[in-house]
Image (cartoon, rainbow, N blue to C red; front, top):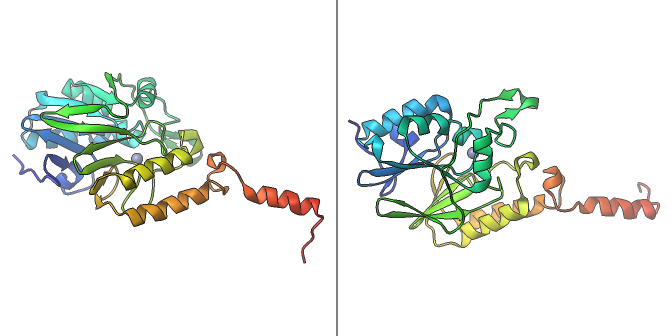
Length: 260
Ligand SMILES: [Zn+2]
């Protein structure tokens, strides 16, 4: 038996609990005997994750659900295996469900040919769709589902009182979930999601990668300024909404302007 090390009441993060990095953050939300996992990580780590849960004295039969923040391979590759082992249900946003059920390898970053990345994406059936405003109950706890598109159109976050399990929206260093047109990223949506997080009555952010951190509206404002800049720059290609430099260029050509 292992001693439980909750990071907040009713919340254990399994990398923290293990004392070493297993993979993406996997949050175990529990009340009495009932528990749920938010994300699962790669298939290779599923046995370690389940062993850990067992050693923490949670009955495996009391797993309420495996919940996907989104469908990316590093968060969700293990769902198929974990679902079989735990005989539980998988819960996801409808757009993530499509990718998970199809075992889509492109939009989940499992296959990035140009970088030699080629991972399996075992298909898994999704038993329940959730979307903004839904409540997921674990024991007497209520996880409020937030749709926070931007990184992916299926990106979810989950509010538990003053905590936000914030997925790939924002990390402690001010980084955000990868912006990639092929992945369904959308910068205007991302900005709205981060504004919502900034303005909500939340004290702590519990992201899907890296350390949890206190919400700092000033820090989020700096991130928002960066993202607003990307709307008008070429950095993320077709994710920009316009490119003012080309209008300037057109005008300079029309004026016949030459280097002075
Ligand atoms: Zn991620």
